[in-house]
Image (cartoon, rainbow, N blue to C red; front, side):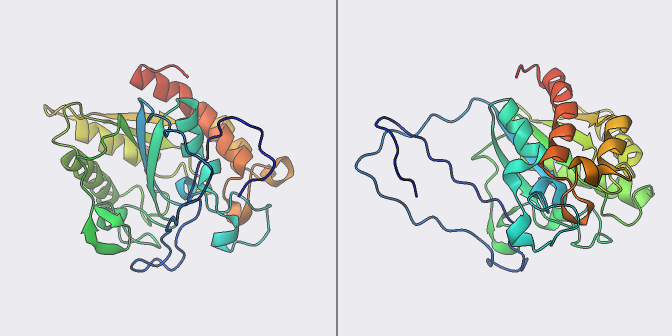
Length: 269
């Protein structure tokens, strides 16, 4: 695992950076078999801040480790560590979890279906084990989702997106401090298409609400989105394969969203 380390304390971080490409049952899950060393110090204390991310391929890190036009074998080129979500979490020193499935949306028209049917599962495609949302409550749930849906400007999309928000609110209804719900506009390819509908869904979710939950809208600037999604992003390294963001593209998105999240949360980086 590591050779030639100097004397002293060292911290090991383990990441699962790719999805289970089979998207079936418990296949694609990771198991940690442990490790050995002469001695172990106590694990670092958990971070005071917590973030949860819900999204599609841009959050899962699809094609992040691939050159523009290269192969798109998921297990080889996916890297959740390099995503806009992971970068935001690191910027705030936050522990984070993410529920992200490539091709997913909020309606059945998305290639991988609606994410709502997976959110309550410990393993996304294995419905037998249900997650206990009281065991880990985030300060905010951050969502970047909707570009895979077939009709993002329809009433059906707005209704489905709002239903997702209500599902999140129900899952954390017992929390003493309710997590903020932060929407992000800025996905790759056609990532700006659902943004107006998402704003409307958030406004409807917020209307006459008295349970402590509230949605907040954030967005990449249009100039930056066109820079990393335009005709020539491949020459500047903003894209991996299949027109998805490279680490450089993810960084542009993260840098636009970080100050908006800081203002919403009252956090400093």
